[in-house]
Length: 258
Image (tube, rainbow, N blue to C red; front, top):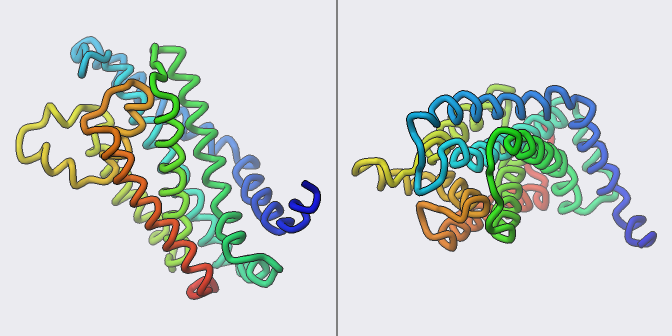
């Protein structure tokens, strides 16, 4: 074990730095997103729950919890890594990391760890708060763990990629504000796409986050608008593509220096 730690000392140091960056600002990086998402549960779940009793046999306030957790975790993993990588390039800190005796995959993984830690903390915190006001179950724990792992790989890698390509802070935040957030709302966080008329129901299946939300929802509730194997397959393919894209950039070294 000691020999293993010695061989990957750089990776461990970088991962600890990225984690420390998240934990030092815990009120902004963790507490604020948890409370914001919890307000959605209170406002939409408990207020609309009196009018929308059930969706697919599931109480409405329970139905929306998995989607909100998935959305909050996806935004956190992406936002953390895109801003961290962009700032490291802007401050020239990335130059020190690249000159360290670390393999490209170690640098890539180390920079992605912060987003994973932040997303897991937000997901766990939101789940605990949701339990205080709802009876959300975990019916398929294996599927839930797999779906969460795919979510983390997908958005942590995407954050790193965008952080490398971004030239301004606006560009780093563009994907989250213009792509991830709207697609999350349109992906069935607050409703089942089975309730939508044609062609909106068919168009929802073009949205990749729709499959991610349904995979997570199946893990919690055992309910999904599409077969869970398809939901996991689509999101796994996207996660693999983003992970390979990120890995390729660190192997080539292009665009890593601002």
